[in-house]
Image (cartoon, rainbow, N blue to C red):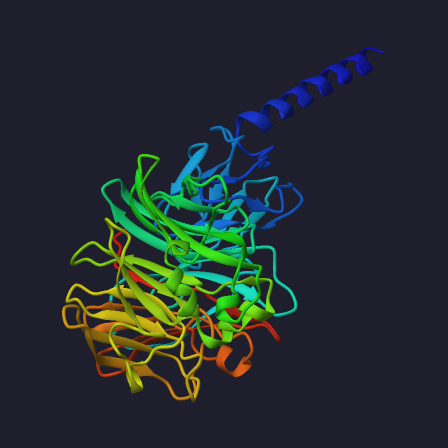
Length: 482
């Protein structure tokens, strides 16, 4: 009986010692209970039995923080082969490197947060010669005519075509990823159709605001128009929107006596107050400018998008607005004080009397350069043959003349939707938009940078799944220092 009692007591002592050892010497009980990463949410939800994860947003341009909630000095954890010394570990991740979290003995597990999600469309470097410095902002969306996915990605690519930042957004209508240098600091924006908002991110890619229009007319509901947005500082921005004007009599245009018209409105907002508003309905002459293929809809369709705005910018020389409308084939200069149309470039009754090769069709992304030239992406929808190009025009705004000073196109390349162009010193940076009917066009490069002589300096493509198309509404390059 005494031996039994002695052995029982000895067993209790040993159990106590083992229990103490598991917490005090960092060898036993090293299980991770949670993993939090500052740039996004890991998925699936953390489970000690699951070792492979992905993350909704990952950033290699800034430091990221990894939190192991149950860390204490007695435990042994490693992140990317470095011993963890605090609950929060700060590191700079290299592009393409996974995050690995290892536990010490006896747990001895490795958890991997993979760098690229399996549903992030793949980007491919085709050509790299001597591109300009900078990073490329895109949205990546997998699209087909039969179905759309319920998520989108925004991403930043380096000059190797590799995503150094990405964010998975749980909405299908996410486009127009842009960057702005403001007195408030570096800002990023993208538009979400389902939210009817423009989302603003700070320099660390943290969401700081969602912007909407201000409802100034109780008769209509303004919805954010996701094709463009201008951000000047945290209290000053220009937001475009659309609304529907119902029961419009279009019989004078050969149409129905009750048509729903999609109208454009854009507002300049300062400190949550509208300081300027422009409304396409206040310019009825635009109804007669729409392209023939849409003009016919006045009689055949209940709802007509006769204008279809797609870009808004500010002329750096006089601070007036430059507006592009796809369905009128026109670029407009809008007086920033009165709202008057100063000139119309292209389309029916344009002020510059374009002819021949200067004629534009369904343009996108019109901007005025510092030298006063007009730069745009010309989709070429109504031209024969259908071929897309970038075009730069020298404008005489006094005598209303325009000379084509530069164009670039590739034989047979045609984008019926979207597209963008920037001039970066002597290079041109092109986002080719998309063609949702032609797999041949869809499989060509999606981003091209050329020098003034048309030599390709950078060429990047997106991988298309069978019978689907991956596109970016725009591709914009910024020389950003991180």
